[in-house]
Image 1 (cartoon, rainbow, N blue to C red):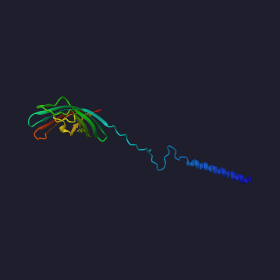
Image 2: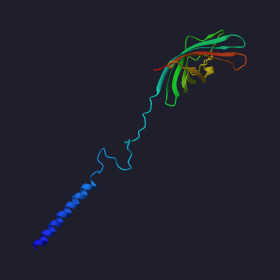
Image 3: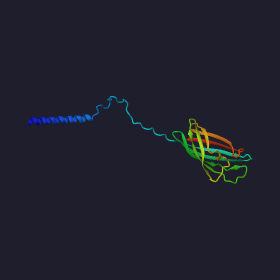
Image 4: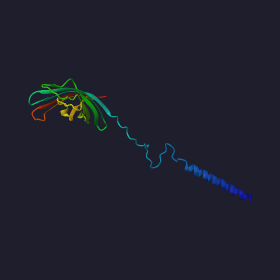
Length: 199
């Protein structure tokens, strides 16, 4: 009887040892740090991450403009304007922004004008940055007063698209435009200087 108890005890010890060994083997890395796994890449793997989006580039600047309408029957109406522009450039080089042009002084005509002259243009700015310049488009967003007319021809050229050269991340350039008026014998003139820079 004692012999049977001994055999059973030793069998229980062997089974316990086998269970402990199996547990340790299942929870142990046979390749500790510094030992390469067969078929594994020798280079550490990293989780890919998206690069951070670049911040939009901000531009600000001013414009100064002299415009006139030369009538074919004789006489001229002239206006002078000062304004500001602000816009941002995204990672794709697209420009979005706004600005305004305000009448600098009074409407000057060679004949009496009874109607109200526009005193302010709200501007919408768009375009694209190129390798050595900026294509800028100015469009009319609003006028003040809303019942006014522009006799000096600033608004006649809106929307206007220009290619402005950049130097040292800045623009300092004058753009001149001329065209015939609606009657086909008068002349509109638009001469505007832009000073723009990155902030």
